[in-house]
Amino acid sequence: MATTDEDPAAIFDRYHVEDFVQINDGMSLHRQQLIDHAGPVRRNVASCSVDVHKVVVKDELAAAHYTLHAVMRKGGAVTTEIYAFAAFAPDGRLQHIHQITRSLT
Image (tube, one colour):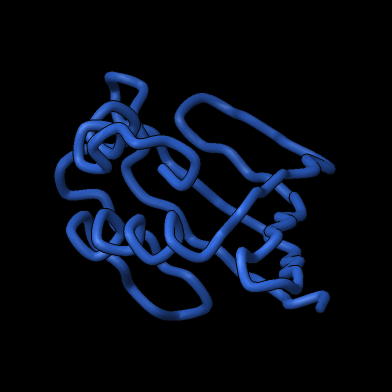
């Protein structure tokens, strides 16, 4: 959602169920909060990339370890290590994610 002009809600709904919940470092974020977050990210991030270290998938569950690198428009960079644990709905879209993050910058 950060690197396109496409409607954030359309992108979100393509990959997530309507009642999706993301728990990031103990904070719950729901659909509208995540969609609203796209605006500031689009304004502030010049580019981003992801290094995927490990992914494990079993039936409707997945676990991933990856590093997110973001270059900010006003200079500086943000690097975050992320451990994510996800569950998928029967239609393949994300149902919920629990993430643990650690800032590396």
